[in-house]
Each structure stands twice: as structure tokens, then as C-alpha cells.
Length: 447
Image (cartoon, rainbow, N blue to C red; front, side, top):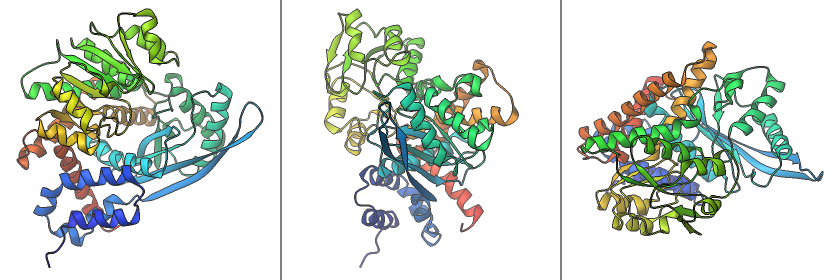
């Protein structure tokens, strides 16, 4: 009887243990498939149980969050913190407040985070957390009371040298401010316990823009590798929050034309280029729906559904909304409409079928764990500034961000060249980060 491949053996065990954790299993399967060449070259990794150790979180904390709404009714939400790996430093990863949050989603996000953080070359481990609390439709006081209750419990498990959460979907500077205030009441003034803070509270200049800007810096490296540039290219962006908005701004700065953006309800298409000032007023400064764009821009087209279902001719796609937002048929539509480059601003926004379509059609594909690492990279820079009691200029931070994104790209490209993978940046990212992690794992011994 032929011995089962090590990667398949590990995946089968995880599938048996966690059959309902679809997002987590998807992330692990894609990762294990990508690193197969490394495993084949290192059969000793089986004896060291390298894959079993890297696919199980160090710990998962789950807790309830009771809070009082404006009518005096007590509400209860579920919350989690997945501390996946501290191999490379304190756990680092965002908090997500959204009704879809569950353990599977946070395990997938935490798993992806350890490799993303490893690629930055900065001393941060991987984690993720959040709650099924929905900030939409809540008053300022309700959001504040929820954040205070959430941090009352979470404060037991986080700290500047242990676990440093940041923001994610539903958690912006407002929420981070409330969380930091409650942590300070409980533990004292430790600004470095959270990143993505408002500037007066110890935040870093350039952090808000970092994920979107970093995405476009990575995209530029992809374009340069095949001797082209962003100027004149038509770009589809999904989402309209910070990541999407600042990615769109940077695309525009490099001469690209953003023709579409979206939110969870609808999408807009403007053939002449989206007016980003209007998007800022609606979505970044305000909390409006993207559909209101057409009130001041009647020439634009409104679509009630996913932007990926629209027929839009473009050269580049930047999915910046959420996980698994692009499926195989939508990816086929992108290819048919001329898209040659996909770089991910969200975490795992392309499902497995979509990724296969990209590869089959030779679409240049930058995976989220590499392309959207700019946000966590600048979060690590924020931690450094807090530790040194310094504040760096926006130009300093942006210069470091550009260097980090170039280095991440070169790491992915180097792995592609070492294992003869062409320009398969997704596999390159997994391999480069995995090799970093294994080296540290073997140095530390069995812990």
C-alpha cells in the first residue's frame, strides 16, 4: 500500500477534526498544495511534525460579551481571539466585528496572518480575533459600551509583548480608541497594546493608508516584472472602506483609472473614472451606502449586487472587500473582459475555483498574504514607535512601507525561481513564508 503524502495526511486529519470549518480548511488546503515541493525536498519534516505544529493554533480564547443597548436591554455577543503562532514575535492581527464572525473564519484569518507577518520580515507572530457584533445601526454609545465590555475580557490575554490586536472589518479608529480607553482603565497606559490607533493616542502616520497603498506598491512590482506599468490601465476595485479607498487613490496617483467600487449592497461603474472625493465623503468620512454616488453622478451605473457580476472591461482587479468574494464563474468573467492582473487587498477574496481560473488563463495573481501585508507591516512600525516613544513622519513610514512591499515581492519571486514556478506568486508567497517559519521552528526545538 502506497504511503499517503504527508500534506494529504495532515489535511485529512484536520478535515476529520474540524469538518464544519470550511474557510479554515480552504486556507490550509491551498497552503499545503503550494508547499508540496518543499515537503518533497525535506522528508525529515514529517518526523518533526512540522505541518501538524503549524496548522494548529497555540490557543483559542472564546468568551461572551454582555452589553446594554440604548433601550436598557442587555445584549450578548460571542467573541474570540485566535493566538495562532508566536514563532516570529507577539501575536499580531486584527479584530473583526461583523455578524459573519465565527471560529472558522478567525482560524482561517489567523492562519493566513502568520505567513503574511512572516513575509514582512518584522518580529510579529500571527493571530486574529473579533465578535459577531455588528456596528452598523448602532449608536456611538452602544458601540462604546460593547467595546468596553469586549476589552474587559480580552485584556487578560493581550499586551505589548504578548498579543497586539489591530482593526479589521467593523473596527476602525473609533473602536480602537474605545478599546484602548478601557484597556488603560484596567491595566494602565500601555499605548503599544493596540495598533491602528488615532494619531493623538499613539497611532502611526500612514497606518490608515498602509494596506491600500501597500497593495498598489506590490501591484507595481508585478507589472514591472512583465515590463508594463499602471498608467492608463482600467482598474476594478471592490469595497469602499479604507483599504479600497486608499488603493484607489494610489492607483489614480500612478495614472490608472478606477472604474468601479462597491459595498455590501451594490456597486457603481463610471467609465470615465470614479470620483474618489465623492466616495470619501460617502464611505470614509460618512457611513452612507455607495448607491448614493449616482445622486451626484447620474452618468454612473448602479448595480444591485456584486461588482464581480458586472460586465466591465478592465486590465486589473483589486478585490478589497471580504473572503471568497470572487468565485470561478466571476473569475471567468474577469478574464473574458480583459483582466490580466489580480492583486488582493482583502484576505482570501478569491475562492479556490477562482484561483484555478487565474492560473489556467495565465492571469498574474498577487495573493492577499503578500499583497495586503502593508497594513500589518505599518502596524509593526507603530509598535516600534510606541516602544521608542517616537513618531515618524508620513514620508518616513511610506518609504519603509515601499521597501517592505518590494522585499515581500522579491521573496515571492525568489521562491518561484528556486522551485521553477514561473510567476506563480501565490505559491511563492506560501513557500517563502513557510521556509521562514520552519527555520525558526527547528531553532526553537519542540515547544
